Image 1 (cartoon, rainbow, N blue to C red):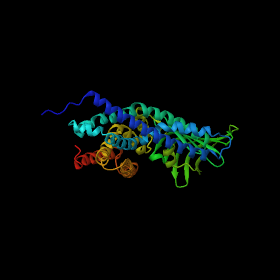
Image 2: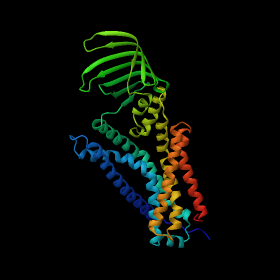
Image 3: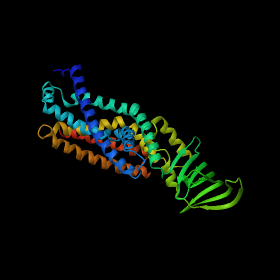
Image 4: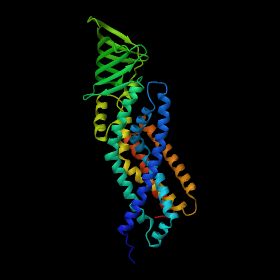
Length: 367
């Protein structure tokens, strides 16, 4: 006997039901996260009496697309559990199984939805999130100014702004070596906090030592156009190689097609790239990760929704999601420390989740 035909009507019906559940789950979680962000930003902005509460709502809104990308795997996990539990409770999956369709066939529509959402995240949500996150960081720099901000230009040159207790320091270096511990052809501009020019210093070499920087062959220019020269000078500042690396553009503010070029510039400057490479590969793995989370959640939804309530099914999903999150964070820590290649650290959670999901299908005999 031939296998029963999977009609296009049933295919699109299951796609629509699953897609709507994912969207509703996503909206609920994003709304909750938005509320928490607004409360936290209001707390931070409360120290500045000149800023209204509306700024917190605007900043949290700019941060939403990036947050939506971060929680997309968990949304897929939770949405899958809810969707198939509802289909089971409504006896729709019972009818589908009664028609002779096995799980490996009636799950195909949801798999296509997962793939489509993953591709949309890469093509649409990633550039949108990069644009809005950049605006968020601009507002953050405006309302929370006491932080270092840096820029890497083409060819590995860097610009940095470093606030100090008594002044502000602007640094330009034509070349960065040894992970930011050695800067060549450096220009330092010193301004007061009110914006008054204090001094310009040009050094041939700037080398980092614990607690200070050592400058060599320095020319100083003061506001009265007087030029002086020194062979060596010690500069005490809060600026460190770690601060230099962390102050540069965060990977969340760059679209994928710009991020790859930025990584190459960081490599030319001798700065660490693990964080940016890890983010790059995570974004590339998004479609596969969403499918893996679907495969991880579907066996639980099909198995436990027949005998357990919605609350118990969601509890299983939360525990599974928490376990996956811990595993992902451990692998991420290894990737950021350089003990694992960035590609391995980004793709390993996807591979493990997918294999565990397939194993659960076979164990529960849901194939």
